[in-house]
Image 1 (cartoon, rainbow, N blue to C red):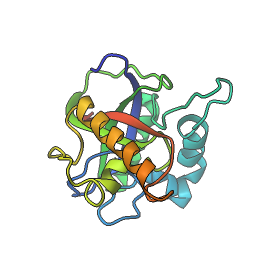
Image 2: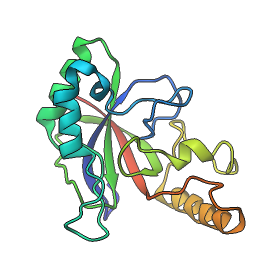
Image 3: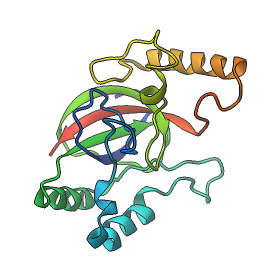
Image 4: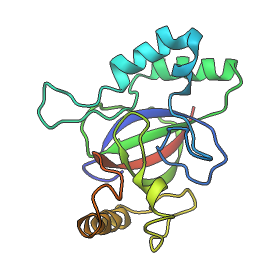
Length: 191
């Protein structure tokens, strides 16, 4: 684990064959996965969507100024319930263990088998729009990504962020997505 990063929790993502294995989960672009996909099921909205809004997609924590909340679940009972329902419906999924520099929520991860995927730069919650997924191939092709479509090291992603900031200063406003991006360190975990 990288010193200073907080293990925030798990993001449940629909499975896709896309080489990119990061947090971008809007499901809108070709090959893009969908995060928290059961929330859209009409018969589950009262349970999964309600839980998501109350406990996961909190965004800003207004009781602490300038403080974010990462949209990840730190409740293993909910994760097990979610996974069980996905399996009942024959929906393939992935479980992403998210670590960021944001201290909330905190998650004590059980000893699961996990595979390190890399570093992403995305919104801390919602559909987790990823600048890495949406910009590297088109705007910053000089950066090389690992086999999961992510940066291999913290140093590499920080170089990209510095280049992105230089680009924003020399190009028209809104050329790139504007938002509150954070660095994610990601593992895929297996229950």
